[in-house]
Amino acid sequence: MDGDPLTLMSVDELLQAEKRHLWHPFTPMQSWCDEAHEPLMLVSGKGCKLTDQHGREYLDGNSSIWTNVHGHAHPTIHAAIRAQLEKVAHTSFLGFTHEPAIRLGKQLVDLMQGSSLTRVFYSDNGSTAIESAMRMALQYWKQNDQPLRDTILAFDRAYHGDTLGAASVGGIPLFKGSGNEFGYRVLRVSSLEALIALPADEIKRLAAVIIEPLIQGSAGMRIWPQGMLSGLSHWCKEQDVFLILDEVMTGFGRTGTMFACQHEEVVPDFLCLAKGLTGGYLPMAVTMTSERVFEGFLGQGRAFYYGHSYTANQLGCAAALGSLQVFREESVMERLPEKIGFLKTQLEILKALPQVLEVRQCGFIAGIEIGPYAQENLTGVKVCMAARKHGLLTRPVVDTLVLMPPLSATLTEIETMVEALRLSIHEVCD
View 1 (cartoon, helix red, strand yellow):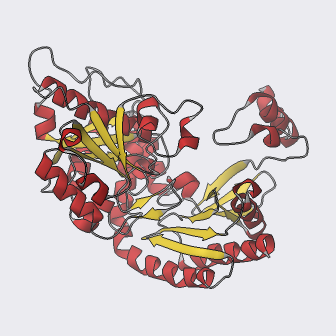
View 2 (cartoon, rainbow, N blue to C red; view 1 turned 45 degrees about the vertical axis):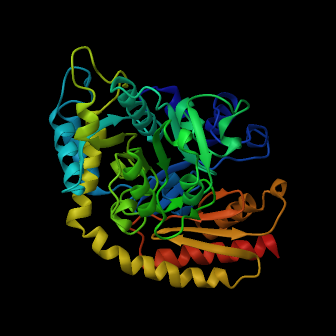
View 3 (spheres, rainbow, N blue to C red; view 1 turned 90 degrees about the horizontal axis):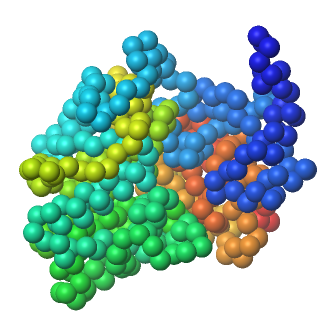
């Protein structure tokens, strides 16, 4: 114990301090701080299971907010982080470089082998990966003789992060705070057809189009029509408009291919990655782009004036390298089709429930929409809270129950997760 007062705190004392001092994201804090509410405190994890302050175990049904890929406490990733920690934990990337960043950058480029994505820019999280891509696109046109290209085109119900620029291209007002008009000049459409129908004078102002490929996450796991992404890519090439793909959620196997864009053989001008990049261990993000964009920043006095103190943090790079090693050594992608097919079969059980409006699946991502219920009833929240009694942790998007297990989930664990949702839907909605 060594006299550290924090090590001597009981669970009750910790939770009292929690309610006095902490503020949680996306959480109504009045009910959270209510005296009768006992927050769930997660203390350990192994594989797909997490353990709380009372020793109860739960399956991690949303991969710890869509980040965890190979399960918790994976020995390969642990070893990679420990080995790097023995050397150095962090040094600046502004004017310096280091081996883990170089190795990781090369491996990421190799994952898109033969494509135009040959440059890697590091940042801290999904929002900053998006910020980097949009700033690069806007600055590129401004300093390369097309300053009138000042607009980002985004899609209805999109979510691209919470920093000011990323939020400005978001299409969900609730996530943008009290003031919704800020940030970049944004043009918003609902579909590829609406984009194609835009007036010529609006198209001339477009610097880039940004989209979550195949599936919109925070919109309620809304799936784009097949072929939409390849059609969008073709249109962007015809118009010479940059295409930014937000693969913060869909990257690293979630949709059944390493990156969602590979389903329709699309190569964007910017590929934004985060969440699963480090296997869900440490915050780190990447914006991949082309030699064309990179060369647009060369020349006297030119630079990309954006960056963060922890850019290319060595421990984050080590975790990411460890995660990619797991993909190779454990044949993760080769084993995934069986799990995706099994999940599809299990979801048929939920489709048959009268309380379920629709089940949407994209690879190893599922959204189970229940209802219709009044939004203020918080039915989706209640179902996910009930699921805890059946050993499942997940969060809804309003009344869409999200099921996105780590790729390491076994068939038995997948079956248990779906059964927990079935029981919880019956308990709450009957």
